Length: 204
Length: 237
Image (cartoon, rainbow over all chains, first blue to last red):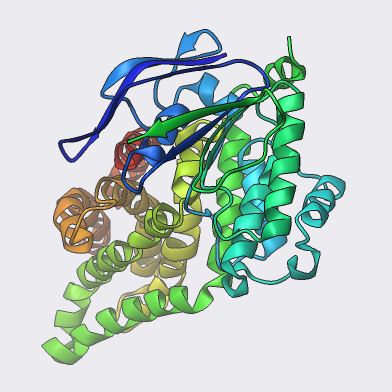
């Protein structure tokens, strides 16, 4: 259960949002929309445990979320706007490295599955530096198959993805929610989610 | 009750060694893939050291007196030059966020990064320093003490530097600020490191200075990862 009460955040002395409230149970996803600069990324960073709200509380699994708390780090997967890829490493090395950082085993079979699901097999041995924006995004999202976490926090996951990529993302989300997972997603484009799982939040 | 409750219960508690090993292995691999950059750093060290005989003249007694100090000052500058490598690219591409959100303890991950940084930037300086010491006419046992001092001192430089590198993340003009912040902290290491060779030259044992360098290394190994972690978290907030 993820519950936010009267959350507020400021950046550079300007209030981005105030009195944001939501409650998500198992199998529910929150789509956060809003204009550029409305505070979507800041809200997601607060949910992921990277930043502190200026006011309000955020409860996750019955305890208040403090930035970088061990409990939150073990239960949350945050995929931010930056791709966290190293240009010197290949697509496959990047994926394995990021998965291991989150404590996942990342054995060969699972990694192959993830690469195939995101149609990254032809690029697996290429250094990330030569990959396109969409392919880099796919490597980041391929982690969703390798790292099992009940809470997904995804910042603009569909950016630079083609139609097939968006379909793969939606299928993964549906599977995650069906297993009782929770997702908080900032997005500019509408994502198809299973009936009854969709919650929305408009920041202004 | 969802299938995830079992997953969460299985999460690795702590995992200090796995965390440090992950960071060490990844950063060493990255260092191996960017060898030209490391070569430039080593070349910088060689050139700075070589400039002194050209500048002060080829008087053997003078060079012999200057040698240890010059090699140590050049090592400090090379260490300073290498520090932005430690966190800046991870900060820019979002990896540092992922590192700070990893279930492994952040100080363990940072320790691994610092160890890899020293192995790829500090260790080559230690290895090449006896060769450069010959330029200054240092004798065999002086070269041994010099290399031993650098071996004990350069990891401390990497650790102290890590604190400064993390504190200046995202700051404008970070490079100059880093130098102002870190060079004063390097002073004791410089004094004991160069002092070890001087002591031995004066007929005394070098062991007190080397022991102090060792003590500084241990103190930094305990404190620096914790301080650096705190600074990284501040930079990300």
